[in-house]
Image (cartoon, rainbow, N blue to C red; front, side):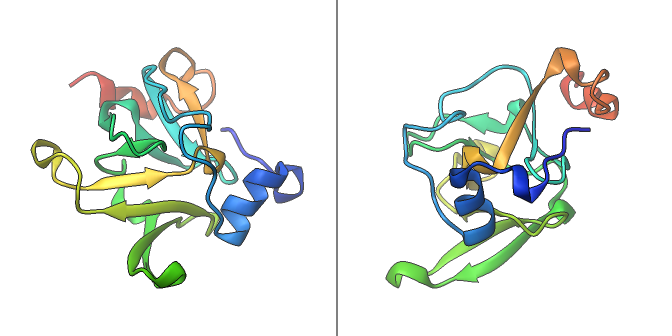
Length: 142
């Protein structure tokens, strides 16, 4: 499993995951990344999203229609910046991931998990077994 200690985070990763920050749109690692694989919590290594559920939303951040397991995601009311939004956090590490909105594609369930690249790590499909995520191969064989 891929894990990262909080002391080993970059300044941006720390800002996003530990201080509820946001990285710049269209200037982050995964906003236009569509390789087959999974996205895990950068700190705990917990699998959160698959490339099967990633879609182009034109918002500048990685967008997913659903989480691998809803129990691994915490949703909280966020009233910052004069808005009311739903914050998404990783249950395992309590890291800020981003927000979820109800403007996703209807055919995919209508949700858009707008996630900061700085909060997640991509694991390519061909490395799932090698890195301890072999049980998730089934998500790509349906």
